[in-house]
Image (tube, rainbow, N blue to C red; front, side, top):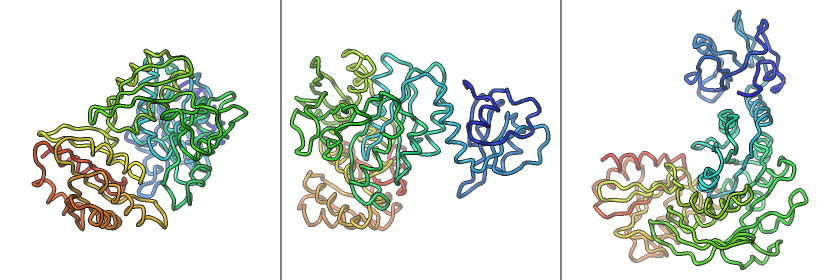
Length: 465
């Protein structure tokens, strides 16, 4: 790891290097928080969590030839260096910020209420046509995950695509201080984390905290069709790059025109999307192999990033065509003559409706297997009812659902649809017991709920039975 000597690390995290005995100039081979991932030359950061305390594993990691540990406690271990800090959680972030500062690469920070992961995957796929790219893995997008993502960057990487997820005010400040984006992308301002952020104006304020920690002369790329984002006229004295569908502007638009926009959108169902992408210099056809028209916005954001970093049209087209989704995010799985739409990682009203749009394009019986959406504040019942109304309007054939709040969703479907067959259950176990024998060849099954519902278990059972 470039520049990561024990001495430099101690200074970066405002700690005191103890027991070094002239080892202060040794370099760390890696930084981890999981004692099981320690290898020779690694530094272990002892975090205290709800279920375990990393300090309890310090003897074990030294036995695995760890170079050093970062600890909040004074240690009685001779001949082993450690860095004593007030907070290991803060030290983790300080170290990541320092390591980011010594690497020469372009960083793209991505935030938004919906579509962060899909947009990250598209941007990474596009940039990989020209650069060596590092990207956020899985859900490593918070105050622990982002530092761990940064530590996996190397001097060989030329660009890093970093997803940044928040649920409260000031959290984006802390993440952006680590990432220091050269390019900031915000996908939209939707209804999520309302318990802490109150409303969409609060969400806008929290997301745009990223702007306070951008690199000098950074580029900001925003969804111009979002009625909140389109009001942002300038960031650091520069006009953002806006993208959207068609040329029409929202009434609150603060910009003259969308620099990048899509027309001639053809929904190919589960085979993806065909469209024309317009830039300030040219127009070109593109194919997105992922279903759902909401992915048009993700592709436009990726196009904007690609153009900003000097990619040509053919490179952008190739990157979009090659993109693949990860488990839990509109991931299509063909199994035993059925298609499972695995979108179970998380859910809010906007993403739930987008997933239902995808399901509605499928052939055969369409079955929505849904659970509760979390962190929706005082209007949580009404928001679940609204999604149920939307499901009824989309003509979905069958609903299987469970969860306290999904009762409102099921009621809405019963009241607004004469054709949708509703199956409501008291538990996930009861749902699964009835769902498995119900499924038949040719079905398309959407699995979606907030992460705490653990609907990945349903996906796993379906594809392995």
